[in-house]
Length: 142
Ligand SMILES: [Zn+2]
Ligand SMILES: [Zn+2]
Image (cartoon, rainbow, N blue to C red):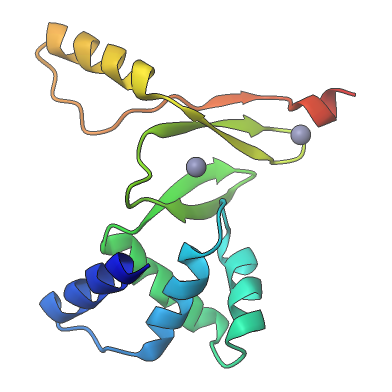
């Protein structure tokens, strides 16, 4: 957590942003929660610990946290974007249940290795690797 605070503080200083403590409140809740959260879900958690942080402050704080490289945005899971940890959390991809929206993580480092090899073969410079699997989770199959 201390490292993440420093990364956020550095980013705020480098970009001459206002140094509001609410950004650190949101960071605290986000870093200590493991999962994939929409802004609504995240703000619910933030409010429990810091009742004075508004929805829009949560939203703006997450945009800064994302730009600082601490959060990644997942798209098109039931049309809502979600945030997850990004710092030291890169080598995984997702299984997304299209019935209940559950998101399961799996280690995709082998897949990335293979994708890098394929890209090199075509002298292609990859900027992103995707290996999302859509389907129906175990619970929903019952
Ligand atoms: Zn499901
Ligand atoms: Zn994830």
